[in-house]
Image 1: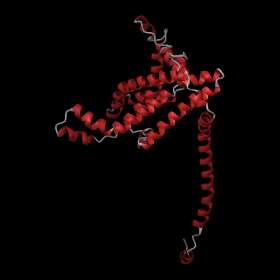
Image 2: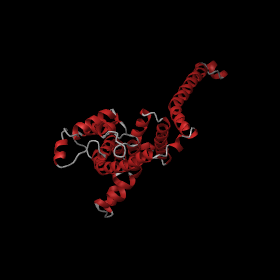
Image 3: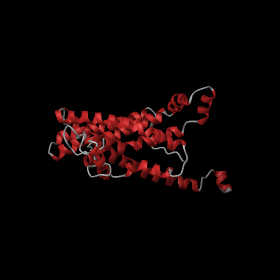
Image 4: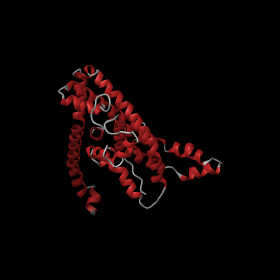
Length: 286
């Protein structure tokens, strides 16, 4: 800045850039508005059509209630399986450094980016009648494809990574010195894990479970490939939406889809209201 600019208070180039800064601001605001409308309009139209058009009231039928009940039951079981097997895996990835950890992390994250239909085909090739484990299971009298158990496995396969990632972040964020202080005070290892580690990682664990449940509830591709679309046995709510749309029952399809959309939106809002959102996508460097 020259002496003349200092004496007169003339901002010089700063004035030019500040004036130009308004143009990018308008462009950004317009892009944000268009993006929000693009994301919100389809869902708002769907829910509005279901509520204002009376589809919700007409959708309270036996097939919808049956599919909803099956969805709630199978997602509950898949969530238990995710918790039982995902918790130790998240602990291992968060607390241990070992060769091949990056490969395991890639395997955990793979179902997130894998097309659901590919996931369903992979499950069928692994657990189908002619699959790698299909024949041993058949010899033991266990048939998985096109059963309710196949629905649970498909849901757990695509949804477990959300819990493992979140739980890993929570465990990695626990201060080791707090655990050491508990041990010094005489706490057992089980007590440290229960009252210190799990307690401090609770928000991340809860957020992971909620997101995993929401993903299970909306699962479609892997389920229809591995479990089929059999009413009362494997037809969950997303599959019912597809079946009714294909059958020409548009109002029932819209109502069932609106129920799913509202459930997913409610889960996401709850996660953020409870301040769990920071752990959903967080990644901790190894």
